[in-house]
Length: 215
Length: 119
Image (cartoon, rainbow over all chains, first blue to last red; front, side, top):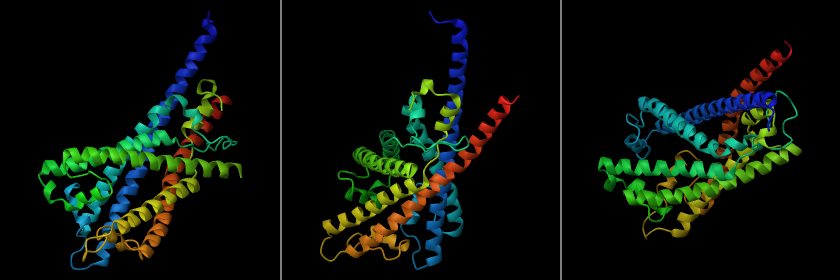
């Protein structure tokens, strides 16, 4: 029978670790959301700016189409700032969802998600080890969800038949069309491609990080 | 590595605050983006286009941002090169933006913990 005097501090320690872990996960989620938001917003702002500075007769004919998904966005000077805002919102939401789904299967083994031998200093955290399967599942689900939402938004607007640019995805995703069924077919393929790409990225990252840690 | 239950609070927190190796993530994303852009271009080149039409007129618009890129065989190599450096920059930025706030917070936690120990 367990000694209640010893069991009580142990339970308290586990409770404290549990609380710390949850706070850390929340912090990670916010950090990734802000980082991805800032990056996506900047990329959209910069892409718009490049086209505006280059000029021409029909500036940003194709990039303008993003206005279908991001109200107020256009390849104009005010539109670039609206794009920055929308990019931040979309990137932050994607980053938060990505980390939330990525961290869920890892919560019981968080301490194992580090490259061994990379923390000899109290003030230096160890190097993160990426889980290819968790990253693949979360990135695949995110990509698939985005394709389904974007495609069906065109269907709901009633402009699916006037979306030849979106239909071009069918060149890379056989069976994809701007229809509800086509979006599911495309989403399944996006999931598989993202999963495979994540396995490659995780293997490369872990391999290089391990090499650098032991160099 | 010990299982989670046996690891002290400090180590568990440090694992949850693990930093990202900027060079490794940059290299991994660089390889991926380079391969993706090269494959997307080569796929269109192999598929070809109906007589009298350009190959990949939409993917070719990337030349607005990537000097030298086009949906041609030499252009695919420019795409590979641009994909590599863009992927590296994105990966390194992601890592740096992740590591900085984590380092600051971990430092605060460790210092506060040491402060309690000296009381």
